[in-house]
Length: 308
Ligand SMILES: NC(=O)c1ccc[n+]([C@@H]2O[C@H](COP(=O)([O-])OP(=O)(O)OC[C@H]3O[C@@H](n4cnc5c(N)ncnc54)[C@H](O)[C@@H]3O)[C@@H](O)[C@H]2O)c1
Picture (cartoon, helix red, strand yellow):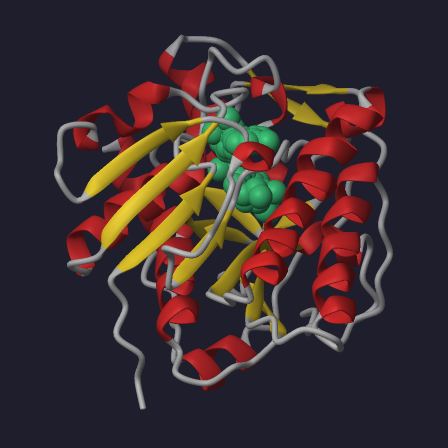
């Protein structure tokens, strides 16, 4: 029987994906929504259109300062420092944000013996350079960066701790998200945000697009509204699954082709970045069959609308 859901928590609510999830839940449910964010990389502007809504409460704080999750039926855990390159440079800060603060949430659940559905924002970065293309969830783990390793580690903590406590979790391994608010110029890590947002922003500013390496690296671009839908479907799924799902379009586009679609020949090549995969390409059979999720937006259609 489906559980009645009345109140949920979104961590990282002022970020790119968190704020889009807030919009999605606001439109598609009648739930009370608390959102926590320390505004380290997020921006209050992303959620300002909800700040006076009586169904939404914004808590400006760290995840580690949450004292209880007792009030919530679902916790959507998105808060993180989600950039590959900075995770090599400021390692402890990333371990703290991506692992310790997330483990604090598990400890709260154990402390209160209250186990809301916990939907974790994982990453396809854990596959590194995959052997299987398209890549199913069973692909071997090949972390090429501290960020990828932290995402993987936390999945393992969920798995291990659920052998002793009744955790009720789903990990969503996002491929390459894009969409509204992906580019935040105030974020000191903005140079490493979604290439789609960066390219569109440079075109708007009349600047040449910068393609890393030879641009042949391929990405599976997934629209943020489709990620929000995957979170929602994970939240309401009636059974305990304790598993991971890929969330991607199931198609790839090279970064060079993306640049050409956005701005013709107005690009130049810059140095390749280490620690990044040559290809991301999701096998989405599992999420389609178990959660009934389908993507609704294709990157080429999105660009046609954005550039019209
Ligand atoms: N954007 C991507 O390319 C991508 C790809 C795969 C997975 N993900 C995952 O999706 C989630 C959301 O990513 P995003 O792109 O929206 O990033 P983002 O940086 O826009 O949002 C993250 C939010 O978390 C907040 N935050 C960080 N540490 C916090 C803490 N300790 N306490 C409270 N708030 C904190 C930040 O201020 C920010 O608003 C992350 O978990 C990320 O790892 C993102």
